[in-house]
Length: 307
Image 1 (cartoon, helix red, strand yellow):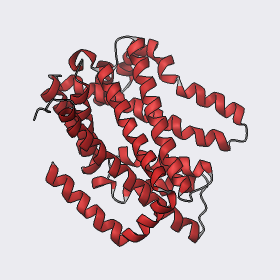
Image 2: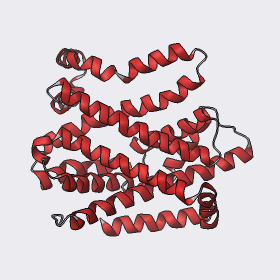
Image 3: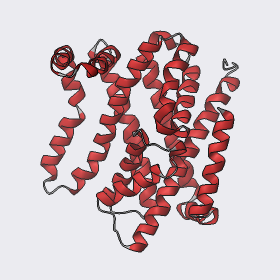
Image 4: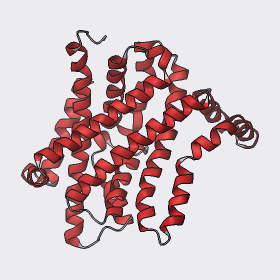
């Protein structure tokens, strides 16, 4: 994994030199300010800690008292997701959970599937803030957004009926997907509500940070910077995700920003392209920092991560 990561990072560095040039990249970060850049990086690392807490709550019996070990698992999984193409890094999660905590593969896979559905819902809800801000009737849009935000909680009591209905009417090929969702959903509303809440907080912070960075680098209006953050993150969960997101993540940012109001003038598009690449660089660096911390912290705590 180390050689793969170093190879992809090296190719990514060459791509950045060809596309913008490191001098231009560093000058844009100097304009933002080292303190601001460090704060953005730190907030992204905070989202990794929140994500780990969500996993620990989801697998509370298997991971009790082993937060640092779980942090390492989630960070390796996150780094593999970023570095490997076509979302193939997802397969590492159930394998890592079985190796480290003895979680059966089926349970790890089904839980990850449900959490990814919650991720997608929260990501769309975070992006909906930009739509509400630009709506002709913001009060109505705000109420609809709030309803969408809590929709998983409203549907949870109906989950058994929904699963039975889905099995009755969906094609046989989708029955397995329905079974995986049912197996991965927590048994009680309290556990599901905590997973939903931590997911919303995680994605709210991440989208806000990315939108903030895009705005600092000249992407506007606000709806465009939020759209850019949303577009980049949606591109990362699609099957067409390139290794390290090279090309696909910045393209997602550009598409999301222009869809929600960014100017298409040549100068504005040039600014958007530079901001997209720099924001993607921030994501890659935060993943590397998070993984590094997950490997260092056990030693600082007096332990040693298991191989």
